[in-house]
Length: 200
Image (cartoon, rainbow, N blue to C red; front, top):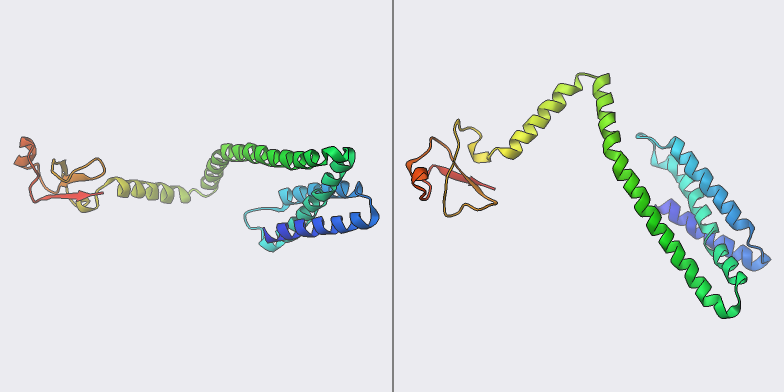
């Protein structure tokens, strides 16, 4: 993010200084849009799982320059298009609609991302297992081991038979298990014997 922010600051400051000296602002939004389109298209083709961060730095700076060239010139264009009496409303409207556009765009693209991401990950895993079948047993066995570790009480993994027992310290978040056969106290509904253990 540092190259992007540096590009935004450089573009905004340089465009403001140039506009104050020349009085012309029409060229900066056009150049900014061209820079942003070029940077985004380049990153869409170059970014991959093994892409280095330093490869993205020039394109992030280019994107930041494009954004910076569109900050101040747009406000100046709107202020020049209205009367001095309406200048405050015009300036606040630019900020308001800019924030609204950023909010709507972020929500829309994040919805698309989280909708496509599970499908793409699943297809990528299937393609990888199909290309290298040796990965399938290891992934399935690790999944079964993780599932067994999460559902089996730590204190009763080595026991052959486990019976749920009732006790005073049992709660919805804590289960009690008997490490041996079903005791007589379980049938009567009283507290468990000393062979019962608890786990979270």
